[in-house]
Image 1 (cartoon, rainbow, N blue to C red):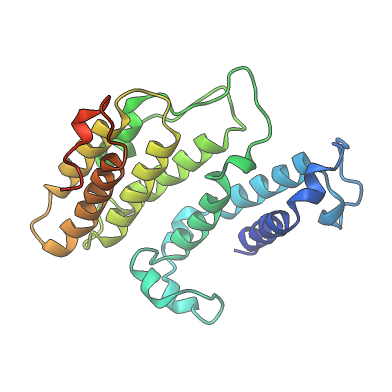
Image 2: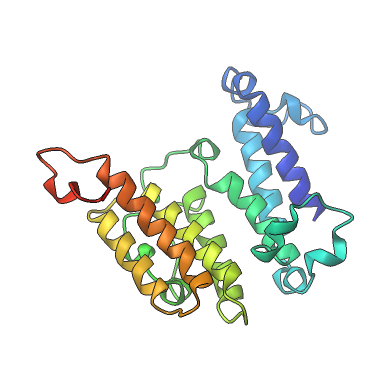
Length: 235
């Protein structure tokens, strides 16, 4: 847990002082091993990446720790425990805050990983079984997908669907926002509707209905004479 919190501390410090790091020359090594404020950007992000990965290694142990048993150690909103019930959820979402941002990736290899496969925008069960690999081992997008997949596998057989539903919607949003393939909106909508149709309880259906309504809202504001298919999305 301490590795995760330290990585988060480094990430927060960067966000508050990004101008210092962007103006700094890459030194190739740590100027001062003990003072992260002196590191160059590549070194800092490499350390954050290593710490987050190390903090999630003992996943079975972390998954067995209910957040309610360590609530004195963490500042957590009461309502968020329904969606992030274990220490594994908490630490994984801390890591996702880093891996999902554009700024966390500073290396651009020729074989850069991209979310260019429509299958990433699929239902939870199929996503949990996908093979996620790339030559681009430094890709933060790929690392985020792997964390989402591990969380999905963990929650797929929960007795209550709330955590999986929230996780699933977050993953679908992430893929949609970073997609490099065609027909993104239609695939996104199809998956939301398929996931929604698995439930009868209005409480479980509502999160998917909200996402569908928000998609229509966005499309409605994109209406032009060239895109008549969006004309009635706000009605």
